[in-house]
Length: 116
Image (cartoon, rainbow, N blue to C red; front, side, top):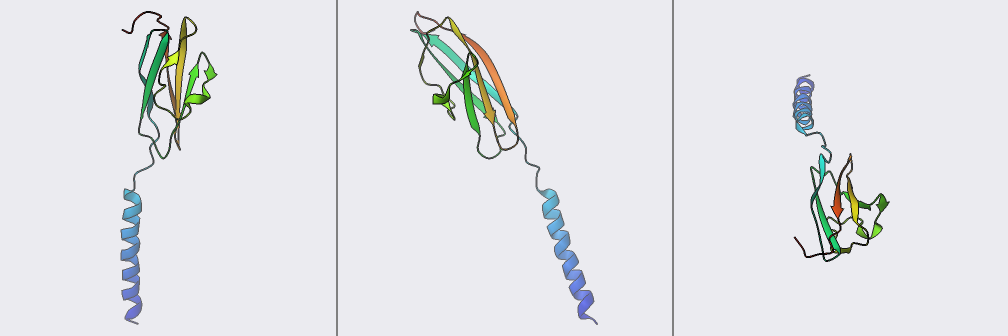
């Protein structure tokens, strides 16, 4: 008879500790921002780079130029040097993590002259 109350108290203590551990676990946040940090143009080329905050798990990065997905840049944070063939590009970056999606956009005029 004495064993049962002892086991019950021990089980309650384990459950309480487990409950505290679960209650203390933070909720998964989501990507809270996607930002085009910089875009520059010169010599009829351009580049952009992006960043994001609070990513959960692995993120995908998608770049759009004038509304068209540029698949060569999938999952890249930096575009590298790209040719400017028009007067400018509406550049949009979309970052998606396990929980959410955020985006940012910027218009980069194509500069045929020297780099700024």
